[in-house]
Length: 238
Image (cartoon, rainbow, N blue to C red; front, side, top):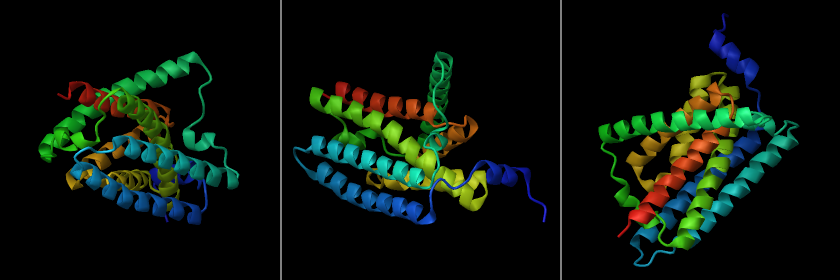
């Protein structure tokens, strides 16, 4: 049997960072959170005075707990955590390089997502006003949540799950798409059309992580993107 260069690359470069039971457990927890998050979001949207602080704090705690679970699972397998992160910064030049890549990626992906959103007729962000921050306390928490999302979600979905899916399927595009689908599904509280758009965004982040190869630029772009959206929505709210 002749193996394609892409499949060989995936097989040689990507090895499982944790056992299958651990991965299934992570996916099960994500599924449970997607379901519970939808319930919380529905309650927020229906409430006259929504308790956004509670939603932010619960989300923040959940993401760090799952991040810890992923790290523990990887370390128990004997795999260095830096493997799922794509190494660590060793010079100022590397930091600036990742920042530059993150900025270019954010500009390009924002343009693509704007076009795809228009094409798919995705509802405007005004439909999510109930979740956006209002006041200094909520704005501060939102920024903290955005940084958390950048670190935890990129590590969980691109650093860990994407690697696991590629190692399992021996195929890079399939691994990226599976991870992107899981990423979109976790945001079910935003509605089906936006889930599709978020899944496409996840695929672009996945391509970036594979190309780099590191989640560092994705962390920067993800955190900046989430923070900017929330801050702008909070400051422009009447």
